[in-house]
Length: 207
Image 1 (cartoon, rainbow, N blue to C red):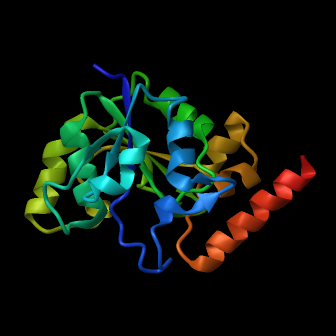
Image 2: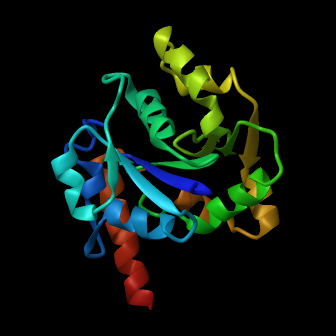
């Protein structure tokens, strides 16, 4: 049994970006490679949820497709939980350029001995259910939502017990506001990617 499984959701259409966000090059690496390297620091196993297996074969990781295709991120969560052999799972969207494994460590500590079903961050009033931890035991609740075509992850969260982590919790642990905002930054549009590249370039120059 794996203690924690890292699950990367790579099934989005990337329509707003115009290209596959997981494969965007950042500092000489594809973004999904950066994610896997960070996840390896806190998980025993990593899985890619995708319906395009050939695209991600280069990662040499386990892959699983949607059992319920066309159901969005909730379908991806279902597939990840279905194929997981661990109690806890950290789900991560493939468009997080500054994913921080140390924040996951804080989730893990909060989850130890807890009876909640999920640990979901809410940063500056916005929930991030695709950078969150879920117990495998919520699989029936996910399937119930899918069967009713209630595809908003918020519908799922309303059916299970959730521990909400705020920016205040993370600041108390020792993270700066800058670190928190960057860790939860999603690349959705070309200008987001441009900003990320400029930031990475300026960081390299400083070093």
